[in-house]
Amino acid sequence: MSTTAAPKLKTSAMIASFADPGQKTAPAPFGHALAKAAEQDERIVGLTADLGKYTDMHIFAQAHPDRYFQMGMSEQLLFGAAAGMAEAGLTPFASTYSVFAARRAYDFICLDIAEPNLNVNVVGGLPGLTTGYGPSHQATEDMAIFRGMPNLTIVDPCDSIDIEQAVPQLAASEGPTYLRLLRGKVPTVLDEYDYTFELGKAKVLRGGADVVFVSSGLMTMRALQAAELLAAHKVDVAVVHAPTIKPLDVDTIVAELDTPRLAVTLENHSVVGGLFESVASALVRRGVSRRVVPVGLPDAFLDAGALPTLHDRYGLSKEKIVETVLAELG
Amino acid sequence: MTTVAPTTAHAERLERLAEHAYNVRMHALQMGEVQGQGYVGQALGAADMLTVAYMDQLRYDVADEHWEGRDRFLLSTGHYAIGLYAALAEAGIVPLEELETYGSDDSRLPMSGMASYTPGMEISGGSLGHGLTVAVGMALGLRHRGLAEQRVFNFLSDGELDEGSTWEAAMGAAHHRLGNLTAMVDMNALQADGPAQGVLRTEPVLEKWQAFGWHAIRVDGNDLPALVDAFDEARSVAQPEGKPQVIICDTKVGSGVTMLEEREKAHFMRIEEHEWAICREQLTARYEAAKEAAR
Ligand SMILES: Cc1ncc(C[n+]2csc(CCOP(=O)(O)OP(=O)(O)O)c2C)c(N)n1
Ligand SMILES: [Mg+2]
Image (tube, rainbow over all chains, first blue to last red):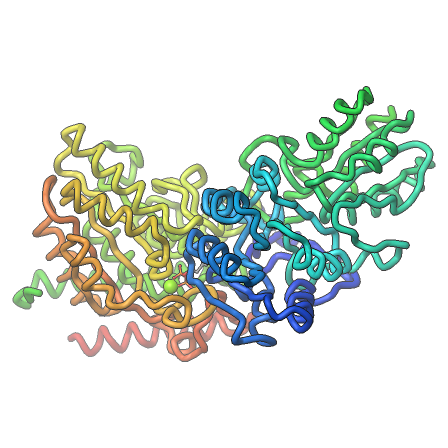
């Protein structure tokens, strides 16, 4: 037991935020974006499985109470019913935590939603390592699970800008989508760059001569931070943001990686079955032989604890990224 | 429900349990204060259920958590771990000194209960609606291996009644005549999005379990004497082959601490730094007054 005076880091799981202290954030960007999209498109409805408050769906519920459906903590019902509503001509956004969508309700999403190619938008909270609760809540393999599902578009947004811009595009796109939700006070990062979210597109956020990062989700924020820190070490880093994991923007990514720069993928997900393996298979298919260094979660059940501790432990913090890159560069 | 004649032994049993329940609540408050927030309301509400289970009903060996002859207690409601740790500490299975590590990095007492972390923890909960399915298998397995005396208890929340898997397990238990299985449901009328009835109506709960083939008892889960009677009744019908039993316990979030009982119910109850001392005072005052009244 610790006897030091240092403040103990707490798990604070359900309300954990990965925003840095003092960072610019936007409140509940998903909820606000969905409420706004619903004003334009009357087919949009919102569903949740007893996690409205924890997936920012409550914002939509307040704005459009008659279009909000509380399904109870019944994830199979949530997605089966979303399929039925889509069959009836509506455009459902259905939210729960990523683990429960990917693990428990997979069969319902696969056969009732993806196979008939319905426009149901699966919204998963706590993607990857964004809670300290341990394996029951940490969706470290959600992309790996969902990548195998035909027809499903997978989006891993970086920040509030990505989410705001993605939501109307998800609603407008045909077929099912999976959004790795960031909720609560979500960092605003991409407004500093010449950037807009385009479904299916990767974007170069900054150029760099020595290293090229290909990242998705909140790891793009970390990639940008690490790139700044690495500049102090005289390492020039390019950052390519690939928020659409499937279908992957192979042209952009392969072009960026087919150079002598050190190639690194960064994802808030297991190194198995996520961005790293998507990128690797894209390279191999194009006949590009490149070594790629994965920054991602280990193929393991992760610890419980405070998020900053865990992000450091598993190499996702900006400091650990810098260490990894410097070690690779020798 | 049969009422036990108020013998001296019974009165002593209740007095002893009341003290344990008070201690369990104190332990929960201590852990809550460490995190500064969390599932304190749930732990206080379920304290009497957990006390009767651990201090009156379950067979276990404090020195050997793997003793084959033990009854199994499965917490499917992972976030109630704070309540279970309090009971495990009171039972002597978890050292009292360790409670202050609750939810901290590298603690054996994580926020969400997991078997790999904590002594005496049979399963990892947290993904709600798993516990009863595993309990069915344990009850089947123990019976199959000829361990006829051992019982399996599954603690579940009212939210877990929303999950289809719970009812699959309920049918499975009745089908396999698992008389060695006892479920205890904490009906605190609360879920993550608010009052349970606004999330998904599960009533009539007693009749549902009955219709599923269970021996169902419904009781005020913060009334210790009534709770003891309910557990005794379940024990009296428990047998290797027979009806599984369910004790449906209506509880009050924050039970025992007036200030928290009166606070708006919330899945995550906010308690300010200065309020923890008030919580302890109110809990103690209530306990002392009840003890006085019982004399
Ligand atoms: C399968 C599953 N779905 C959703 C959740 C998220 N969740 C955690 S607690 C909770 C509320 C469930 O109700 P209950 O257990 O009765 O909660 P409480 O009384 O503590 O508010 C929910 C939806 C979960 N842990 N597991
Ligand atoms: Mg409840």
